Length: 213
Image 1 (cartoon, rainbow, N blue to C red):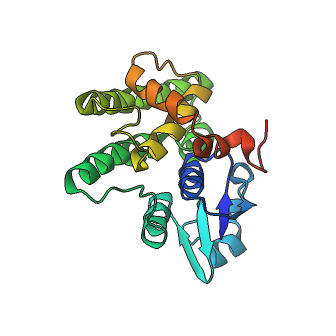
Image 2: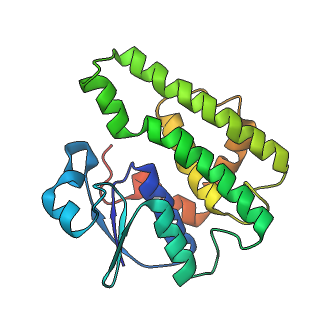
């Protein structure tokens, strides 16, 4: 397998964790989204028509979108599962996942922040305020969901799920952007616990071949 990835992409980070948890070997093919390599004609035509990262190549099969990739990995390599089979637990995992992947991540990703800078010409402090506002809005909801589940040490019980694969990169990015996360102790506890796990550790941005300090 090959993974087209950018070290600091939270969507790529999710997939790297899933691959590591499942013990699947793959080659990393770096795509530098900071300089627009994801929009290169060859990449869009032959790898990922959505012009994003990540993209997984498994034999002749090519797939973009991190959540679709992780679901594919669950179907082709079901142990350990990232998306539980039980209807209630599955629903809880997807509920938290979608809060992060649909409500927090899209408004704070690189292309949105760059649009704020280059097209709307917002000041740096305004861009930072934008980022921190949506982190606070979203993480408050995540924290309430985790408090409701009242389980641990992972988001939902004794094993990592897609919820954890989504939470950890989001927390990592928020910390990188100097967001104050002290109001979300349960989320931070899951994050700190996850980083002790080898699969989460090896997937961290600084451990990627394209890491830029």
